Length: 465
Image (cartoon, rainbow, N blue to C red; front, side):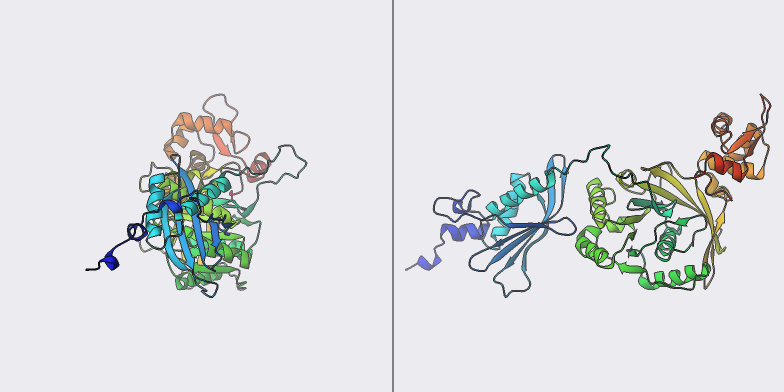
């Protein structure tokens, strides 16, 4: 009996099990074709793109996204595509966003075996080319900048003072149901339309805003948009805010988002909210760092809205500490609301600034009506619930507004702070925010008038009524 048809050659066995044969090694064997270097480029989001074009019209393309070093290993997401000829308009996916450790031979061998099951194209040589090019691109020396060069100094600027710095990444965190999304929309409207929806703020750089939403839907935001405009009695709608509902993490659709930003000249982006924007990996520091690296490619001012950790003692949003560390500026929103009351007291508390001083806390009362939502100014320490979580200086100022000419013991009793802490604070800010009676002992303290305080510390008194 002739069994020749049932016999398998070495290449057949290798293809079946995904084993790369010696003739397809990284260094071509004798008489084998040398693999030319691929065409290399970077996408708008920074992904590394590779294309090999063959003489017979076939094309292989690879995409390496989000490379990041973790414990000396270089991890990335690998996608590979195949096109049979030029007439095939849509490439065939061979590998889609597979996690790859470029510095691990074992992990790389695993990728080769998987790719070989889909066709033998000397994958080990191609992956080695990718590794070399990615490593070079990641560590290529940038152009040196010399301090003291003859260039104009660029001062810290704001799109919405004091909350959002221009071309910086700001993070706002609060507990669920704290009106943080409403604040994000109010800030977006203020910047896009150049109006003051938030009393005590200043739109310093007007520009188009893109609102990326994971939490609600377009109808909810359109309703809030109209209510906020009605509450501030703004009648002109400029259509400078665009809304995009997202269900996939930012990194998965970064090219599309950056393309929209470039096409429509957006200068501000609001992302609501952080947890879903990273696909739920809020505690994974590599995912959080990749998120900040990617959003930096936007080239815009960014406000990321995040959830606050349940533990009051924790610093920053829920998840990895990098939500706090990587933000250029970090604010927390505190809320106090009585059940059944359509008015809400909120306080914006500044916890971090990389480019300057911490701003004083700013309080608002939000009045919810059927057809309008209105923000009005309120002392940050008006609500006893919020006051307990404010910095000491805000609590002392609030007390002295209502109780002028008070001793340190009275202030301590009224604020819940230690008397020694109050004495130190008053002395340090004497002549700037406070003034004391002439006695050597048992001095009585009061607030400076607004005019005198503004002369002493012009930017520290911005939220004084």
